[in-house]
Image 1 (tube, rainbow, N blue to C red):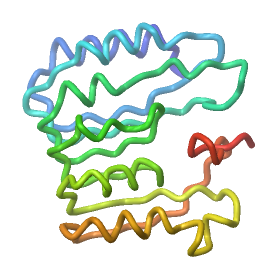
Image 2 (tube, helix red, strand yellow; image 1 turned 135 degrees about the vertical axis):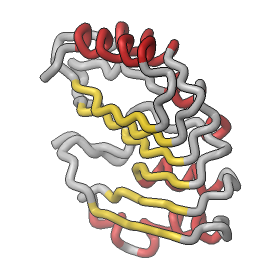
Image 3 (cartoon, helix red, strand yellow; image 1 turned 180 degrees about the vertical axis):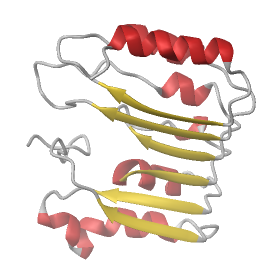
Image 4 (cartoon, rainbow, N blue to C red; image 1 turned 180 degrees about the horizontal axis):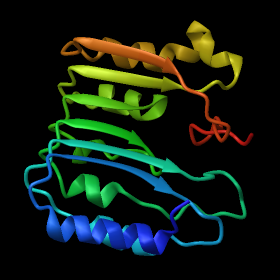
Length: 177
C-alpha cells in the first residue's frame, strides 16, 4: 500500500491545486509501523468550498493493541459543514454537531444511530452491519437502531448492508478477527 508520507503529499497537492472539488473520496491506507501524523496534518488544513460529497474509509487495524489508530479525519469533516453526502467508515465516531447539513449518510451502525438521534434531517441512510455476534440480528440487539429510525421522519431511502470486516468488535463497532 501507499505509505503515509506519500499519501499525505498527494493530499497536499490536491488541497493546493484543486480548490473547486465537489467530491472527495479517500481510502486511507495503513502500513504497520507508520504514523498517520502527516496525514492528519493535511486533513486538518484541507478546505474545499464547493465540496458536497465526502467519502472516508480507513483500512487499518483498529483493535490490535500493537497498532495505535492515530488517524483522525474529523477535522476534515468539520472544515466542510456544507457537505450534504457523507460516507464515513473510520475512527473515531462521527461528531454529529459537525454534520448538520448532511442529507445522505452511510456508516457503521453506531454512527448511523447517532445521526438519527441527532435530529439531522437525513433523507438517505445506509447502515453497514458487521457480520458480528448473533445478538445484532435479534430485535433486542437491533433495538437501538429501531428506536433511532423512529426518530427520523425525514428519511426517504434506507439501505441496510451486511459488510464483512474482519476487524469488527462490539466495543468499537469493530472486532478482532
